[in-house]
Image (cartoon, rainbow, N blue to C red; front, top):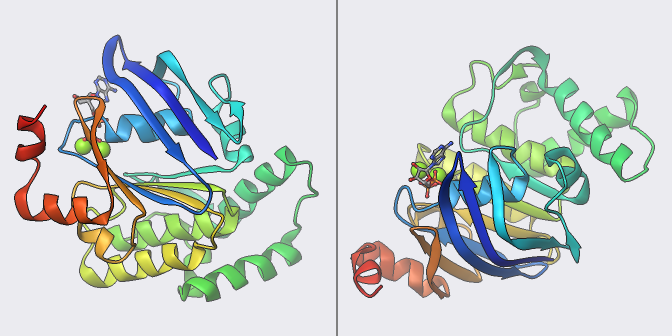
Length: 248
Ligand code: ADP
Ligand code: MG
Ligand code: MG
């Protein structure tokens, strides 16, 4: 599904990613871990096509297409979803309207007819039920006055509505109490269907207690310095990152 080859990325003239290679097959869950400042968010943002991130070498193939020249809405249309580390607030726009607009943009990209109010209501209620989230989430302004946990939950709802092929979660666990973490991770697990792939970006291994990764990669100074299975995350939990960095 995703193949990243020798990816180099710079932001405002500074080289941040320095030769990333990563393959994600459909149905797989990959965790990207690493100390603060190692380039995790840069990788997520680059995959999502945010403009400030300049690919200076290498490429990203998504479903066998080189997506380097794709804008972020086109990547969303192709099936890439990024749950933001810091979700935006949009006063005056109801969450339901926002979700419907986002879904219809993706459907238009895929040359599918738009869902009208009636069909969308039905569709989104199914998603809310699947995620066991409160209905009132739909009528509030997008993220306005949401607690940290509610914002993250809303990210998961967006993900469920858009039905992406590749979900990228950047520090979705940061600042969540255990109950909110459970709601979010239950949501993610309910969206695992054997085909959809996930990249879970996290500083701590805590979220991986709830979402079992197939692979764990450690990013440091813009490179993947170690890959392994879930046991690597447990080792990091126990020993920190120092031993991996010293081995560099
Ligand atoms: P992580 O998510 O692993 O904490 P980031 O990808 O946010 O790391 O940052 C990696 C490095 O890139 C850091 O040294 C950070 O200061 C730098 N960086 C990130 N965004 C920008 C930016 N917009 N302008 C300049 N430097 C940036
Ligand atoms: Mg950071
Ligand atoms: Mg980050």
